[in-house]
Every structure is written in structure tokens, then in C-alpha cells.
Image (cartoon, rainbow, N blue to C red; front, side):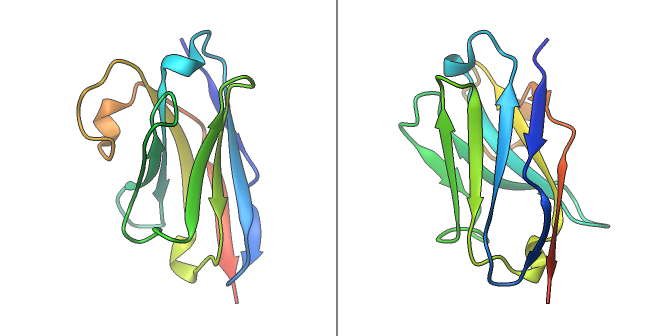
Amino acid sequence: QVQLEESGGGLVQAGGSLRLSCVSSARTFSEHAMGWFRQAPGKELQFVAAIKHDSSNTYYADSVKGRFTISRDNAENLVYLQMNNVKHEDTAVYYCASRKFYSGSYDLPGGYDYWGQGAPVTVSS
């Protein structure tokens, strides 16, 4: 069993920035690909970004390309989502997820084995 815990969510003004963090309890964190998903009120779960276990590739939803950056620190079991120039449509609960030995597309929630509790992000103004 792997536990994920997000932090860094909150209220942010449109055009501003914030960074979400997710810490994993995995004993082999460096072997897990990591992803961020979000769910806005009344909408489906949406893929945001993903990163390979060794950071050799990153993947982004079209809606966040150029604004969000995913990164990781394997020494500290951490994955980050840097959110810049946030928009009202970025308001959602953001979920951290991990997967191991999965060969499918990185944007599919079903490919991830473990999920965090979610971090609410509200964009104002």
C-alpha cells in the first residue's frame, strides 16, 4: 500500500502562481510514474500532467501547456505541480496519483494505482 498526500492548495488570484506538492510513502518511488489530475465541480476527472519515473519525459493536457510544470525529487519522494498564470477554469480539486510498470497512456486515470486525498485550488478575480 502506497499513501500519497498533497499540499499547497488554496486561494489564488487569476494570473498568479502556486505550487502543489505530493509526498509518497512508496519504498521504490523512483520506479513510479507520477501524475496530476483535477476535478472541477460538476465535471469529469481531467488529466493535467504526468512525469516518468526518471523525469525523462513529461506530459501535459493542452489546457495547461505553457503554464504548468510537473517535476519530481526522487531523493525526497516528492512530485510538484508548478502552476503559473492560473485561470478561473483551473479551479478544481487536484489529485496526485502514482503507477508502476504500466505501459498505457499517461492520461488515463485507470492506469494509476494510488491516489491522494486531493488539494482544492480556487482561482479568484
